[in-house]
Length: 241
Image (cartoon, rainbow, N blue to C red; front, side, top):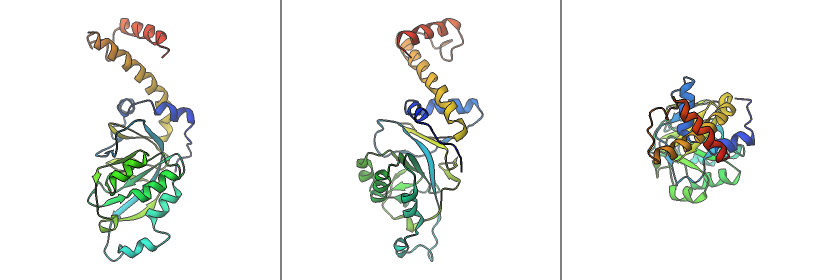
């Protein structure tokens, strides 16, 4: 588990940068597979989801271990994980990219939100999806799924390394979600990327204005002509960016 603790300053910066900018910045560093594939927001996104990862891993359910009675066990990992996820963290679930059964439902997600969770991500399904959307905490999934997880999944490990949507997720990694999806930022890069991507977002806002006014993208995006960098500096100062 990472010893990294994300600062409020880094959290605030990451709330304002896109997963696209983060993906590009990590690609520059040789990291190609940081996006959680297939997971989409349950409800329209109004603000980025940002938090360090707290994980739950599922394995295929075996019939002799996963009858409905196991939910009576106070040590059931799915329930315990909701009670242990620290405030400000994002619960990330490895459901083996299988949305045929739900990773959780609205009651458990409501509890996670009540305890201060920053969001929840699964590469599987959620039951009571409309209820989860109404909670207001960011939530990402493949699609709605009515069956309980016990029909196909067994919650087996809390806060260990997992795969989620083909991305490796380690406890303490920084999870960022926006309208495009969810990306995993290795903890040791979070502060650096927050700073870099804040600058990238500023430049892209400038580019959008220039293109809207008829500018060519050649030499502008990416900025390979000094005249465009000079224009950007003047724009940045004029707009306090």
